[in-house]
Length: 239
Image (cartoon, rainbow, N blue to C red):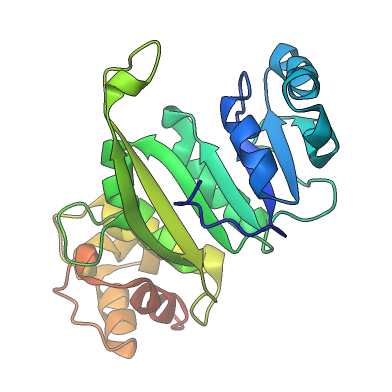
């Protein structure tokens, strides 16, 4: 819980609480916990588990039966911190969806597959830098917060896990959807220079070069060299 840096007035959003082991740890440290659980059986069981184990804290828990990837809103009070063991197969889409949906989130601490953790926290120019890195950077500064071995889980997974912390900041100037479209195009052919990689996005190689130069970016540069601010500036150029 220390790694999450929770405050007594925080409203925590937990995704996939399962049997509630993390939930029971969160409730004493925060003002409230909203748990989003897709499994109706577990969603029904969690309040009863808390009522049995910590009846004094049961009033702090709200359970929402929903798919976190498709949820469109949450009950008040708005969450200020995301603390979750995210499903490995949808960890990045869930994280990005919740950050976009909930501007009240000031901090996130998520447990993901170790390889995904490396990608989320990778800086420009590093081998792991890619689409998850750039899109996470739109919302905040992500960094590795720890490594978790597979033996602490039951059943034991086939991969190691990593903690990623994200501290929210204001996004760069520009349009998020337009910026993300450029990011997707740039990394779809990451071995190519941006003049070629962005040809379809811009309409032609020549148009891509013109927009790159308008943004002050060398057309021979590859996508992994650009920061999220560079991508936002490029997306803002006119055809």
